[in-house]
Image 1: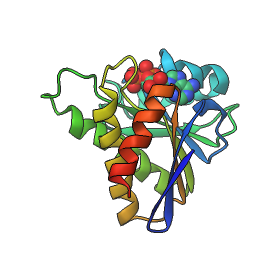
Image 2 (image 1 turned 180 degrees about the vertical axis):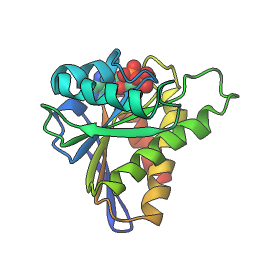
Image 3 (image 1 turned 60 degrees about the vertical axis):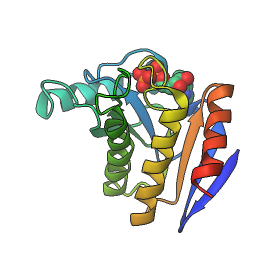
Image 4 (image 1 turned 180 degrees about the horizontal axis):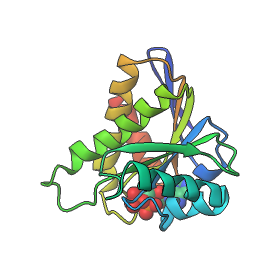
Amino acid sequence: MEEFQIKNSKIIILKGDITEMNTDAIVNSANPSLMGGGGVDGAIHRKGGPKILEECRKIREKEYPNGLPIGHAVITTGGNLKAKYVIHTVGPIWRGGKYEEAKLLYQAYYNSLKIAVSKGIKTIAFPSISTGAYGYPIEEASIIALKAIKEFLEKEDFIEKVFIVLYKDRDYEVYKEVAEKILK
Ligand code: ADP
């Protein structure tokens, strides 16, 4: 575990399973359908139970009939998870880097933090968005993730702790190395 201070807030990088986090919120790397999927999305819905999916279905119906756009975020309760809320965001699919992937990935983090503040959330955990099935190279993605979180916390220090939970050893090592450069 590595901890970095950004003004009055902390960014904590750790290896683990995000579905086990007892933060106020965890972030789901969803797809536009909001109807579940593989990877971290599948794990969250499996452990969180059907209530989360039901809330997602209602959000689709009322607000996003065509799906949640990339870079946007919505919030549901945490169902059976330890976390009180799940924030669902959609990262970009990596298509070589010339299709605004960096901007969209930045927005996914930034908008997730914005919606967290609007709900009074003080502790939140992120997975590494877009670096699984969506193919975003881990090093580039970690730079964007850490920059987005840092820049948000510099403007808005309501959130006390932002965890980044890496599932794979190598991802954890990359994030730690990049954080040493960007956050110190
Ligand atoms: P995406 O479509 O955004 O690429 P994935 O779920 O395929 O989403 O992968 C995103 C990241 O989540 C990957 O780095 C993957 O290793 C990680 N991951 C998968 N399961 C978990 C979990 N239970 N907790 C934290 N991270 C996870």
